[in-house]
Length: 233
Length: 204
Image (cartoon, rainbow over all chains, first blue to last red; front, side):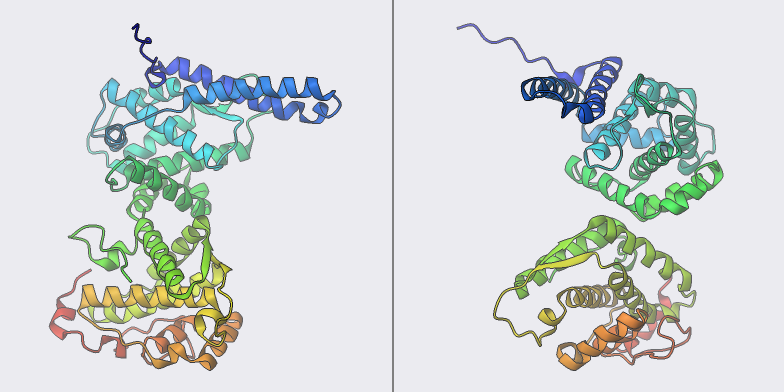
């Protein structure tokens, strides 16, 4: 009997393709929302058809981008963030872990769907800042945070209406700080516990948001704040 | 009940308790235990619990003593600060209470307050016992209806009185006038049973 062909591993997709699928999922969801007021004027069969098509598009995109990471990827990402590791492969794994964290926080309703992350740009930003001798983990993480903030690695999806707002930036900053604090903290014992720790890091950052926003534009202040928060996670 | 141990063998419980992961695990363990014991059911908002933790940590650091002698007494004070913060932010809500219960009992008179008090007393006892070889002897007032009525009324007006009430429940002498202020050099009843040498050798 003929065996079915091996299943294509979605997690093995290349970064740019995952970025493209993120765009598809974001576009579908935003379009559905934008059409919501007009949808009521359409006859039911048309309305249902449009909605089903957009839902399918969104589901397909989301399914493809749900990054699957291994526990070891988190260890590597943590090393990259602390300046212990700077190889290209490690930086790419770190970018995947940051994207994973972003998506998890998104699914938990911690930020809005019109913002999109690009793993490709993230990896490039991580590669653009080489570790400096004598740099502390906090300083290294603050440098990378600043570099990512100044890039277009996270922002409004191309083609989406509206401009990047101060509120968008706060959402991005909180998510990035949550991720950095998580990666700087003492490691959990397995992937499930790591995911739980990321959720706690998000809750901690939310509770500290006034302090975070006050510090965010000052790398020296951020370099002190990140390890302090990580020590209390 | 079993609260989580310290996060690592090298880390004392009082330090583990200053980590959100320990704090939330301990609180959730307390919720489970109290639910099993009383039949009450609670819903807990983790984001609010994180706010409690941050607010408590700031208050904790603001008055943290430098003298080793003060540290055991500060455990009691810090537990009081925690109770004050839990009452202020109210992260737990009783969503179910069994029928036909004696509402004069603290667990049913004020289910959330009972949860917070037992949590703070348990953490307090755990830190005293594991880090300072001390022992906490809870007061009979912990089950006294009038004391609980007074506790609920008073903390509603002045949340800092939660610190004094926790001392009362723990069998210590409460400081009613300025409960939110830790007094250095105050050798409280809490230090009873703690070996002096151990206390002097302790370095944070």
